[in-house]
Length: 334
Image 1 (cartoon, helix red, strand yellow):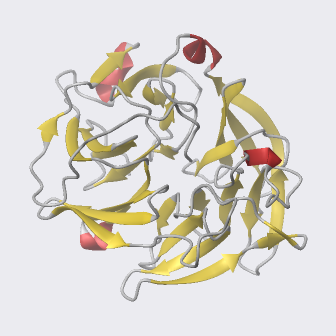
Image 2 (image 1 turned 45 degrees about the vertical axis):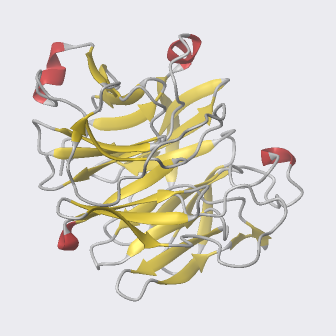
């Protein structure tokens, strides 16, 4: 889910010992509608939990371990954060494990999704597959690596239904040159569904840079972010009972926010149990009602890649460029 940003020179210390959290000095919560108070308390603060990453991404909460897993895609590393131990390296490499391949821009895993069975789904950008990770053995098993005989670009984010169907996005962010890459085999940057029988279906091949992906609580709406500065939108797909799209529409448009030069683009997202959408984009994490009304945003001061609900469902964790942060919620998100 990494978007293209101007390279910054960072000389930051990675917090990997201890779990002491500090208020993020650059952060603020922007309230656009009074209804935001039902989501985030007026006195809520953004806490910094870790720092010094190149591009933090893909957070997912592992409830059985009370731990957050997240990735640093360019550094090919997966981290684990707990209240007791803070940030620790969990797995390196997180994605591609072989000799360097010319033309691969980001070798690490990107989006993660903890599964009820205790495993984690990976959008493995570097290996160019969607995989399943056994947390105990740290062994990965590729679930799908090709569509119509051609390798995927660089799978970016994943979500799944309760029955086990997996939706994922496949932009070219992991490849040098993006669409011009000689390694790119797919003619589109697609949104796909992988069914339990192993069949894979193209949901949409018209988005320029499909990125974050999430399902509504009833699993009848699929949300997809398009991280294109020329078309920075979030799409909503109406799904039938089999997961097939029957219609699509623009859920929200961030063009005006891009014109304001707010940092970031539509990227990762999560949907709360009541349908409230937390979507990263220009200026941080935007909070939308299911009807598409924006209530406000959480602005860390940096481009925010993704977010995840954790703890008892009343905490939102944020991967924001070089930081890991969290915000307490009033609502119970899950």
